[in-house]
Image 1 (cartoon, rainbow, N blue to C red):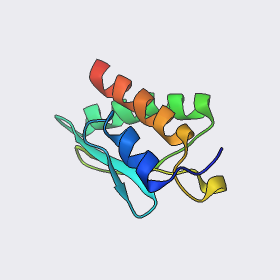
Image 2: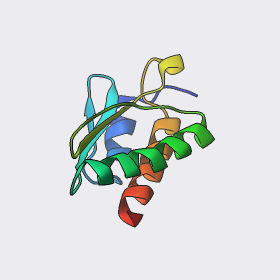
Image 3: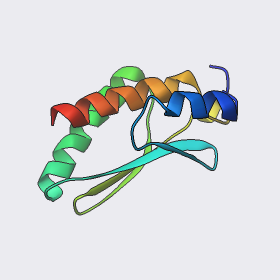
Image 4: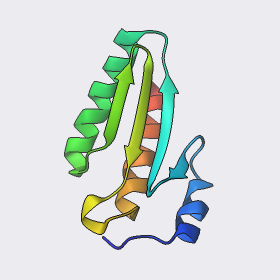
Length: 95
């Protein structure tokens, strides 16, 4: 995967609501009703990450999930990150 330029990243971010480019990665946060709901969605996302062979830097505190994506092999953001971000958005919307 080829590392995207900041201009390419900003253009792609226009297609994702709530995602930002911060220090070499795209990131977002989601808030859920409670911990159980947050963890349930994290589990669904984890299966999708495994299917795509791409894993986020993420953390969860009670009902909040913070996700950060970049491609370590490319030392930056690639199409792979945007593909996973779009899948995450689909999972969130169906939750």
